[in-house]
Image (tube, rainbow over all chains, first blue to last red; front, side, top):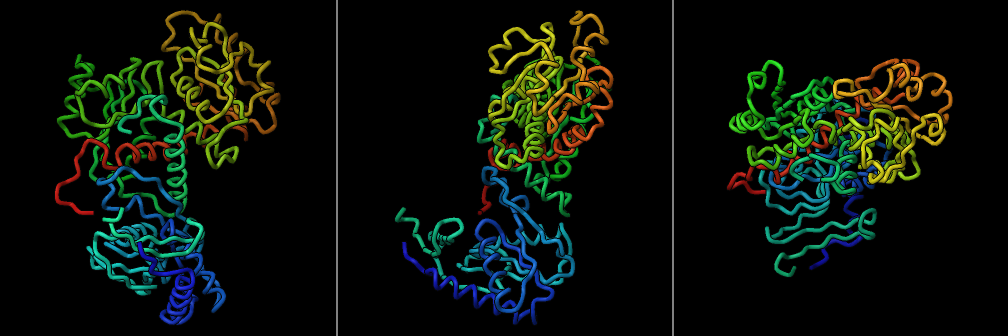
Length: 177
Length: 320
C-alpha cells in the first residue's frame, strides 16, 4: 500500500481543477456541478466552495447513477444514494460531472444516461481526482487531479475527511491483501 | 433476498434498506426522472386470482417505471375459470420466461407454495394470500408513517399504532403487526372479540375491545375494511352496530390526538369502518399511502430483480 496523494496534494489538485473549470467555461454563469455519490459528491462540494472563493457560487447537486448501470445484473443489488438536481435544472447548462476515480468509464456512461433522462445540457464535462486508465469505453476526463498509471490488479482508494476521517489517495496491490 | 412472501422473511436491516431505496426513488421521481432503465428486458407477471384495483395497478406502475415488461393475468377470463390448477398456470408462466411473479390468491400460503414448489424459477412477491400476509402493504404503511412523523431512519419507536376492525380476516393487519414491531412501534389491535383471531395474544401486540378507550393513546389510527366476502358466519349483530362501536366517525375524529393520522389500506367502506368526514379529513393519509405504494413496490422489485442473485446467471464473457 503506497500513498499517492496526501491532504495537501488533494487540496491543490482541486484548486487547480476549479481554476480550469472557470477558464474552460469563460466564467461560471452557465456552470452546474453534479457530484457522483459517495465521494464524487463531496469533491463536488469542495470544488463549489473553491469556485465561490475564486469567482462566485454555482448551482451544485448530486447524481446517483446506480439505476442506470449496465453491470447491475452482475452483482447483488446495491443501495441507492441521494440524487439532488439543483432547481436551475440541467437544460442548456454546462454540466461538470465530478467523480473520485475514472477507471472503466462505465459509471460516466451511466451518468450520461441519467442526465439524458432529465434534460439536454449544453455541454457535459468531467472532472476526476484520479485517472487510473483501463478505459473500456470511449470516455475521457476534461479535468484531472492526477493521472496514475496502474495495473488492473491494483486498487485505488480515495479517502476523504467527510467519509473516512482524513484525506488521502492510496494504491493497493491485490496480492498484498 | 429472492422472494418476498412474508415480513418474517426480511430482517430489520433489509426493511430499512427497502424503505431507504423507496425514499431515493421517491426523490428521483419527484424531480424530472419518470422512467428508469433498471429492469429493462425483464418480464413481470401480475398473477391475480382475486379482485384488486390499487395493488395490481400499483405493481404494474412500479414495474413500468423501472422499464420492465408487465403481463397482467386475472383469474376471471382466464383458463383458471376452466379449471386450470395453480401448478399448470405457474408452469405456463415459467415457459414464457417470467422473471418475477406477483401473486394474489384467496388461499393463505399460495405464494409460499408457488415459491417452494420448484414449478417456476422466477422471484415470487406475495401481493396478498388469503388471510395470511400482504408484505408490500405493510412496507408502504411503515414508509408513510415514517414520512409523516419525520423518522428519516425508519425507527418508529415511541409511536403507537392502532389497527382497528376486522383483524381476523386481515392479511394487512398480520403483515403490519410484524413490521411495525420490527421497526419499534407499539401496536394495539382494536376489534370486537369475534374479530380477534385465536392466538393473537402471541403476536406481541396489545389487544383492546374498545376503540373509545384506546383512541387517546394512538398516533396512527389504521382502520381495516370489513371483509364481507370472507365472512361465512355472523361476527357482529349488524353493520350499524359494528359501525357504532368501531367506526371512525366524526365524534371519534375529534377525540383523536391533534397530531394523530388516519390510514386505510383500501378499498374503504365509507359509513362502515370509516366516515367520509374522517376519510377526507386533513389527518387522512389514504391517498399518500397509494402514492407511496408505487415507490415501495419499485424498491421491492429493484431488490428482488435488479441484481445478480435472481434466477438469471450472468452472461459468460461479460467483464465488469
